[in-house]
Length: 329
Image 1 (cartoon, one colour):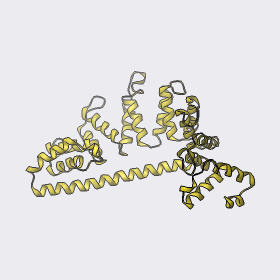
Image 2 (cartoon, helix red, strand yellow):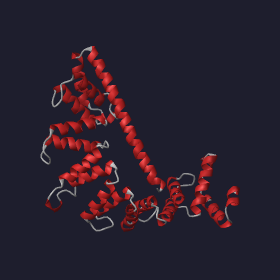
Image 3 (cartoon, one colour):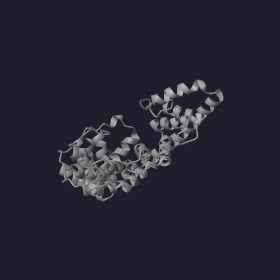
Image 4 (tube, helix red, strand yellow):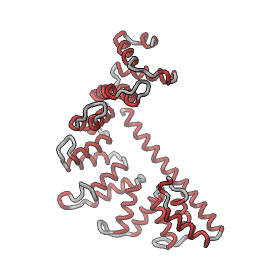
């Protein structure tokens, strides 16, 4: 503590001492972590809004100090009152769930609105749902749609898919007695090209079945292939079926083998194992030549590597976007 006393005046130093005496847990921290924690408190005490928000995170998680949700809320409030969207979002959530603050949906909505108006899509999406469900505000489908669009327009595929789904089959469908399929397709496509699996499935199903849109087997196959290329096991199994039967594609046992193998041997998680594809793989193997099976396994390995790279790139991009939000920029 002595170095800090030399850096800052008595008032700030006394405030820091008070904070650190509130059940500090420095024993489990490395010297570098202790220094970072001390510097964060110093900056927060001097009014730095990012440090105040971070200090709220530390008290909320019990990192460097004993967990104290009320104190965490106080720090979030200080940062929020200085206009930091991330802190406004977190403070809004605290009032929404009664976490470190009394549950108050009106107060929650007020803080989410402040963050939403500054462009934070997390709060824009939250505010849209508030208007949709009448939580803290009067139900208003037009306002809900406005905020759903604001969030989707910032590029997050999850929000784009949710907007498309709401307009297609959800509470915003058939407003004024009609459905806006061009906008539904616009947002499904925006999410799908970013690898949002549910959006890819929706487009493949829409074009494959017809009805809401004109039936188009080529479009259905395009989106099915893309879903398989993003690692969706059900789509991989269906694509294997197409290659096995020659439906819409040239019949190709090697490609069928590769996609069945992806879906059943290399699923993204054990819970996603496509058992039907596994049975079809086992049934076709005895009739295949050793060369064809080898080529099928090699093809599956190539596809698996491509999927992994694609998914990794998407995760990296999302992490970067979230880091930018959390940085206050």
